[in-house]
Every structure is written in C-alpha cells, then in structure tokens.
Length: 167
Image (cartoon, rainbow, N blue to C red; front, side):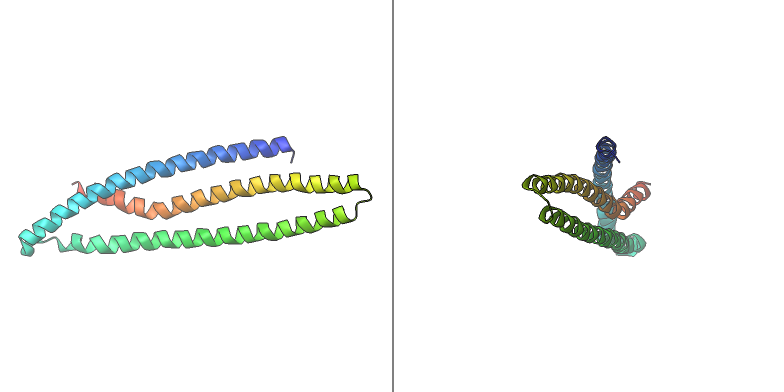
C-alpha cells in the first residue's frame, strides 16, 4: 500500500470517526431529553402513589429499578467486551513494535557505514511515526465504538420509556 493509499484510507477513517462522534453526541442529547421526560412522568406517578397508596402504579415503580439495572448491566457488558478487545489489540501492537525495533537495531548495528546506520535509523523513525499515527486512529475508532455500544442500551431504554410514558 502506497503512502497516498494509506493517507486516503486514514482520511476516510477520520471522517467516519467524526460522523460516529456526531451520532454519539446526538444520541446523548436525545437520551438526556428522554431521561428528563421519564423523570418528570415518574415523579408524577410517585406523587400520585403517595397521595393515594391504594392506587399506586406499582408495576411502573418496579420498572424504575429493574429497567435501570438491565440497561446498566448491558452497558457494562459492552464496555467490558470492547475494552478487552482493545487491550488485546494494543498488546499485539506493542509486541509487533518490539519486533520492528529489534529489526531496526540489527540494521543499525550491522550497517557498513555511518551513513547506512543513519539511513536505517531514519527509515525506522519514519515508519514508526506512520505506524503510531495508524494505531492512534484505530484506537480512536475503537473507543468511539465502545462509547456507542455502552450508550446504546441506556439510550434505548430511556427513549422507549419516554414514548411509553407520554401516552
């Protein structure tokens, strides 16, 4: 893959990351609005239950806890899965970099002249910057995915509750 191809690929990935971040921000705003609607509706339900305990909506009061636990559990599972995958990828990248450094050190040590050693060192440094930039872009992509996956169950529950309670 040429440097131009890598630059185009990385540019497309950066655009996709920006779109993912914008979607996450929009979903967060929608979730916050839905959560405030749900809180307002449920405060009314609790107030009505306090005013007349015999007519309290116990099913809805039970949902107040169970839905939160379910959504937060799904969110925590998503975070754990994504962070496990992320840790595995970062560990692999670190081990790959050890191999690159070993090969560069061998090339520098085995160089026939100071100019050849400087060239080997330069080649390693330029390649390292390219790999580091790609790894950071990949890390950013994976963190955005982790954020979206963690937000999804909470967002879904809040929006569904807001729709249901508006009836």
